[in-house]
Image (cartoon, rainbow, N blue to C red; front, side, top):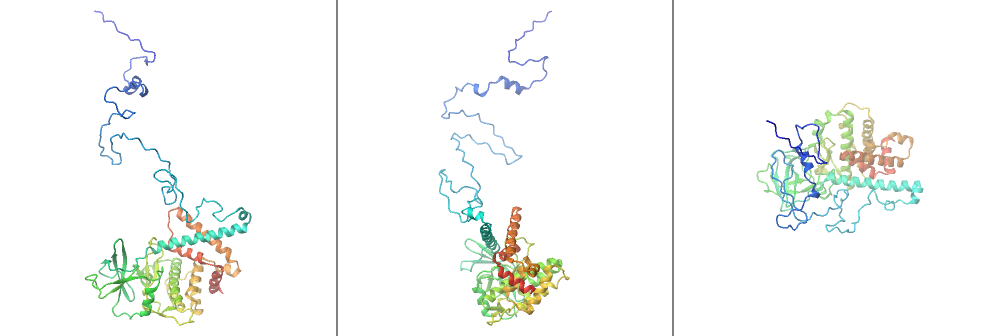
Length: 468
């Protein structure tokens, strides 16, 4: 029997041809050739006419993926027209939107800026073509702007380190005791951590309880402490905890509230931290602590007061706000019960006590041959012999920490150019650290304060006290 004839189909001109019968075909590719493009599809005739000029795509099947939570869920298609794409707005400082652009898209006049931006015109920066042709005028403008910027950095760092002052207590405040035992024990007081809760805020404070058998404080010094404005190195008071406000407290009667919670005393710091440091590190830490103490004593001397006895067990150390725990501590003068009026015309009432404390700090480590250690030894001798004021002692400590050194004083070099170069180097140093995400600390703030307040005359007096 003969087989039926094979039907052959004439291929179309655009149809693909194969030399042999294929054993595998890409179905998706074949369908792509067979289906017409979207532009050639005929319009849909079935169904009611839609108000939307564009046909809606068929709904996709809803699937729930349990492997991840970051995929967006399917939403029903919206018939509202897509909103017009807004122009990209630039990032201006801490503002991520342009405040001149309102929601309606209309331009508004710009608000006046407190200071000209870096990319502002030369006229707003205080420069002119005449200044650019005169190097002296250009240098004067840059020096003035540099000093202004350094003062702004100092004020912003001071605001961060001091933080918001708790303010006085009000009848509506409530209190909560955090510790049943003293958090820190000083020479004549016990400190308990407390929380003061107000209507919209709360503050961590320290209840200062006098020790039994301690020396009776002098009312004049306590009144002076209550009248002083907030200072970085003076213990501030916020009021009293009324008697009966907290049942079961380990004291009787009302106690005062301190704005800062101490972590240890200077005596405890010497026993715990001072002996473990290298001689060079200990000399630097001692200079920073003595610098803060001289700043506190300067405030007393400016108001005609003096501390009868400088005791390390009554000098408190606290962590500066917004700083790393490994940085230098903040020193607080809290022994106002021994403050008395200073006799008029008695300069350097605290100089002998500062000299003895400095020798105590330097005697903890082996003798060091660093320039700072040699300068501190010289300063200790001058404190006992010359009896400088607390302000003069503070200036000498600043010069030992950040210059100028004794070489410039011996050579008779001009101190004005040194001061300008030192300010420029400090600004560059802070900028380099800020570019890496590192925040300035207490030491940077003290250095900014020094260079922002220094003059050629103050530098000359400090060098004369140390090296003449």
